[in-house]
Structure formats: C-alpha cells, structure tokens
Image (cartoon, rainbow, N blue to C red; front, side, top):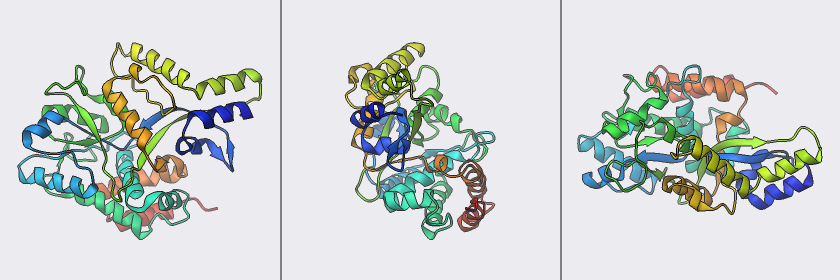
Length: 325
C-alpha cells in the first residue's frame, strides 16, 4: 500500500497492532478487526456467592482453581475438539503462557523457530497447562474428555453451573446460549476477567484480520486509509450489532479514537484490556508454517492432552515436523 494509507495506519493504531502487517519495515496490511484471546469467562455473582475473588496473577489463578476443587466445585470447562482443527484451543493456552512466563522476545524466537519447538521452556509450558487440567476434579468436559468436547460446547455448562471458568477469546460470546446476559449486573450475567500475567506486565495474545491492496490505484489507497480509521470501526460495529439484533456484535477493533458509546459494557471491557496491553503478540500457531501451526501443534498437542504422549515427546515430534530451510 502507499504512503498515505501507511501513515493513516500508523496514526490510528498502536505499534503493537500494526507490526503484524509490516515486513522489513514496510507496512503492507491494515488491521481491520481484532480478537482478544487473553480472557477468562465467568459469572461474577457465582464468584461472590462462593467467596471467590478474581485472580490477578497466574499463581493466584492456580490457587483459586485448587480452592474450588477443595470446595467441591469444578474450576474449568475445557474442550479442544474442532473437527480437523482439533487441538487449537490447547495451542492458545500454550501461547498465552509462553508470552506470560518468558516474555515477548522468547515468544518471537519460538514462533520464528530461532529456538527449537522442543526447547525446555516450551516443554515446561506444555506441562503447566497439563498440570492445571489434569488435577483431579479440575475440568468439566461435556463430551467425556477434553479432546472429545467441542470447543464451542463450553458456554452452556458455564451458565448451568457445571464449572466456574472458561478461558476463550472475545468472539466466544457468540457461543453462549441464546438469552445469556452479559455484564449487566444481573445474578446470572456472564462477564470476563483478564487472563492473569506472571511477571507483572500486561501481555495480551491476539488475532484478527488485515486488509491489503493488490494495486496502487488511488481508490484502493483511499479505501485502505479509511479502513484504518475509527470511523470505519464504528460503522462496522454499528452494522454488525444491527445484524445481531442488538446483541454482542462479535466485532472488536483497537483503532484509536472510537466512540465508546456504540459498544456494550462487555465489549468496552475488551477494548479496555486491548488499550492497556503491553506487550501484544499475534496468535503464534497462525504465524508458524502450516505444517506446524495448523498441523502437528494441533495433533501432537491433542495427543499430549489425551495422555498418549509426554510433553517432551509431543514437542520433539512437532520440532521434527518443522519445514527445512
């Protein structure tokens, strides 16, 4: 794209969100939609009734999970089944914890294969997820096992009281039962809290879409420039909210200067998290070669979750599948 659209993108988006569309210092893509992955869905009233507080650190989250088990409650709803893409929710957990435990530089090195996939730090993070999920009484899986439970089938058991927490991205609002109330103060309302950090920073794992031009016509440049703006984000939010009949839109944007009145309270909380995030990193498996990120990371991760392989064995197989060159 040309200088005008690139300048608009730089003006309207924080550098942490424009870097995904930049190659060798040149901006090729305009971010137009943002997905926030570092979220935990819960019901505030159920927490309050049970005497639980929202955790602000990873250690607090683990302690809360263990306390819930001790109280006879199930902390987590987890499912990673997704047809041919089975395993991707596990990769999101791993990516979030890699970013939290080892920081952005190591995360980038892992994603770009500057360090091998079976680096001891990656194996450790696999085991952090496995230890949390495999603690007796920690997980409700409606399909009978984590790998047999569809990722979209965790909203119903959360509102039914079968678990207290579900870690999933902002788009997950669309998978709760019809009529679910979100962040409106009612006793049954569903809300989110930020997936806690480990090192005292505020890392966010994100995803999203970018627009790019395939010619240098002035009209193409003008469209790209517009798509970088708050005006575009507001127009799209209004349109998608209308399509949803006034419900949560499923759209999110980190563009600067938006009119927050067009967002519902829960959506505003998403944007608050985006605005304060540092660092931000894009979904690692989406950036890895397809053979890995949409292949062995999913399949070997599922084998690990099933107990068919150790974390080391799974990581070794993923590393062996990394394309040469």
